[in-house]
Amino acid sequence: SNSLPRAEAMTAVGKLVRSYPTVLGLSVETNLKPTVQLLLSRCNLHNKDMAKILKSYPEFLGLSLETNLRPKIDYISNVLLDYIRDGSLPEDEVEEEYALWLEDAQELLRSCIIRHPPILGLAIDNLRRKVAYFDAVDCAVSVDAALDMMRMGSANSAMATAKSKGVGKSKAAASLAGRILLAAPSTYSLNLEDNIVPTVQCLAKFWGTEAHAMIDIDGDRAIRDENGCLFKALPTRSNVLSSQLREYPAVLTLSIEGNLRPTIEFYNKTGYVHLDSGGRLIPNEDRRRDTLIGGGTVRGRYLATSLYNRLLPRWHYFKTQIEANSTCTGSNNASILGDPLCDIDGSTGMSDEQCVQEEQLRPPLHLLAGSSDQTFCAKYGFALDDYEQYRRVEGGKLKFNTQFANWIKTGRPID
Image (cartoon, rainbow, N blue to C red; front, top):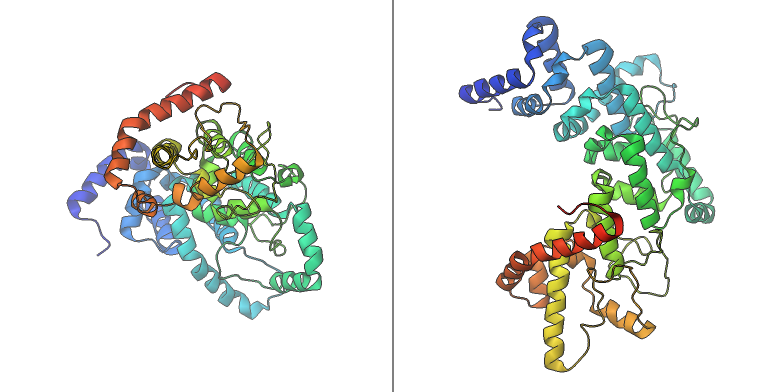
């Protein structure tokens, strides 16, 4: 059964009343029942799902059904489905199309709202403005993408034309706006000017794209109607920025100063990327970077990897093992690998030959950032217990040293 046990339900009701006393003044018949029923039916929610939503964001119960909640759910549905409306449907097909639209949207809505119930409380104009910004990111065609489109010529054009003739889309979120809404809906609760735009600009530089320079926050080139329906299909491939954000949208929820910049500096100082003094990617076509994607860019999910609990402990433990092996073999491998704690200015001072040696020694990112401790240790023949002991003992020191170096540079307080 999807129903909560009575004792658990009564506890949940008590918590709801304490967190949102206004609920006691709402009519059961004209407010509570219709609102709950709308979410249950439109989002294919179970009773336990509804309990989670009520616990996280009970304020949705006080929203107007007809002027707020229903049009907002319709709008979110259209964005999630990349719905394209061309106005050419015969009258006798409209009802059938609406039923299919409701069905297609159910699971997507359920996933979106369960992940971030407060999205129900955002003003629809707030949502429209952020969707328009993400659409602008999708439509900012970079130079490389433009050249690719020219090479593909009529084949690419024919594909776009075929897509634009669709009316209802049963597949989920090909657009960046829809992908973020589905996979990282809490992004929409962030402030556009203070959080989202600076984060996108920071990531654009890190990924070596100028696409952000072509994005106007309040541009006049609307590609959706007020209900969130697309006028035509979005470009299938426009720029690296859009592609990278679509691959891991949750990167947009990371703090620039607290998460992104320290992690970006780590990857720069350890040689996984090469950035200029402004944090922009320096492309190096001559280097073999089979651990990276997109021509030398670190994937968004690796930017979200914990710097202090994973990247720093693994990197320094790896170095200690290389040093131990170097002592036994008489080699000088350990001195080749950079130190992300001491190398504050980011320079390496290494010769080309040393750079090649460094790259061969460096653990690939899918192991350093993306694997479990067991996999990481097994790959290199490290004792898991020994690594875990090292992380417990040295982890706090590594964190302090890194934050101390950042404090010297930026003045950011040490946690």
